[in-house]
Length: 121
Image (cartoon, rainbow, N blue to C red):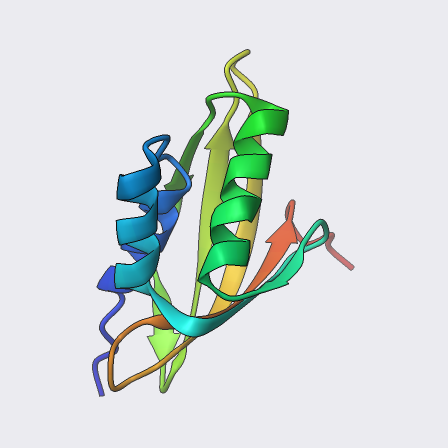
């Protein structure tokens, strides 16, 4: 089975949108209505909470560039990928997400985000 991962890229692009209408449209396109997003800083549910989280991120961090930094590895309704945040001062912050997709719509249902690389044993 091939998993459609296009909506993941739409979701990631939402983090770079500073126009309210474009942000809302990207969220509605990419995320299920009951989206769950959990990382070390946030634990939210729903479109409105996701949009507020993105706006809070920009208020705190300024205009960074957020992008997928790896291929997407997917099976069944699950996917994982690495991402990078390019900060205005030239630094880069890395992490990865594990996501659950709604196979019927292709929309992202859940995101579990982790910061930084895993430490070796």
